[in-house]
Image (cartoon, rainbow, N blue to C red; front, side):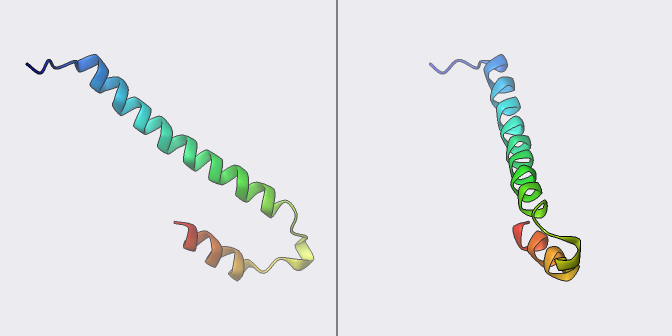
Length: 56
């Protein structure tokens, strides 16, 4: 007999959502670290946009 655990299902959905949020935050941290090393004089905005779009 299979028993339904609504609280467990709710928590599982929350964990999935938090995992998605964490992945977005982690990707932002990595990009911020990369971008912080770019000098304004060496910035190629088109390359930056292309790289961001590739990651999506």
